[in-house]
Image 1 (cartoon, rainbow over the protein chains, first blue to last red):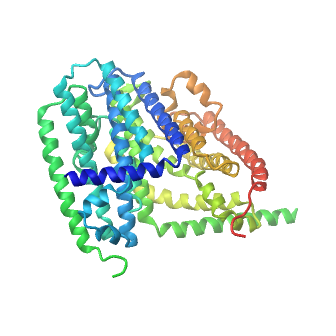
Image 2: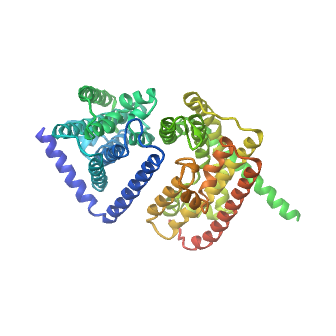
Image 3: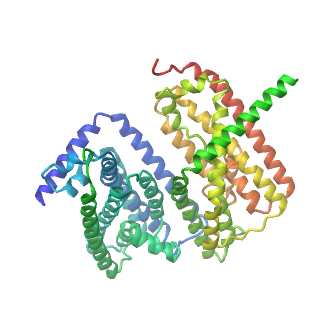
Length: 262
Length: 274
């Protein structure tokens, strides 16, 4: 475990040093985040100019959902998506050999190599929006809720990671998965709204097929103090199962991998 | 006179061939085209679900729009959106940096013709592939749709009007790449403006009055809201004809701007690779 953390820190430092060379990109990222946030706020304001609540969620509470959505989106773009894109690319090109021949655990290594520091702006934006939303909602949330929120956020991120790993592992069989990232981006936008607003079938898909409900709605429920403990148990159990499946599936994929030279 | 007629005939011939080529090449990539379409469906489905929820909470309708009419709006939206996809302004950076443009400049016709013909052909494929998608969406969301013949005819024209207007303005936007390489910020502002002012996010009648007024000064409404409403809203014949004429006007304005900008842009181009 400490080995994994040390490795993550090392890759983070290298990634940060690399991106620090391109400072204009930071300004561009700031602009991009500000524009995306403004659009999100305008859409919320528009919806709530026609209604006072959406399936039991108030304007402030939906702001909290938006905050968690931005935060989780930031985590995905900082650490998850870049690694998975590189994994798919290397499987296709046959250059995954370079990772596999290293002494570390292959899954650990392919999941840590890329870090996009500038995208971290989204982490800050999301946290600020969430913080502001919570002051508007008026907190009944105690320290227990805060702990549950932090835990569920981590579990949610782990689920999105596992989902992405399964998707990327698909490249061992299907080779071309170029559209996967765009497809995921599209589907991830559904998380901007609590999963409860969607029709039943879509709700099931967005919970168990693509775990966006667990990644965004559930932590937002914890933050706004509307969480039920059965949801926590379900999230933990499903998260563990998904992670185990992703790990097993990745190993199956590796068995099929024959490299560029073979 | 006959020389002009000959030039026109060869241009028509050129478009027919360009479209046929696009149809044949794009039909090979049916699966990729479908992947793309499905990824795009998330956006209208989100809007549809949110606004239907609001309408139901308000007792069945919102500003006179029922849940079924929202469904019709956003299902027709998916076709209009597909018709709206033209050569992306982000593509210009690649055309310039890679020297792709040099090849286009060597040909006898204005490069605009090549893009217009190619994407028009692609649209034919898109419409065919869209039909089953629309069927599934209709089963899932039960739209209320009962257009008359005039509306269907106006819609059939309006989607091509939307295609032409958006082609012109995205070309214009893309040409900024001749002057600077940091254009993505400008593109993003443009697309946010389009999202809010076109009817892409929500039927324009749900927007505050001043936003609707502002939208009247932009071409955006004519590329999303108008073609959709031509089919799903209860527009009378006069409004439909006026709308089509305004689409033609915006196409001409866009064309004029493109032709002027192109003259200056192409002077700034220095080919790569020779």
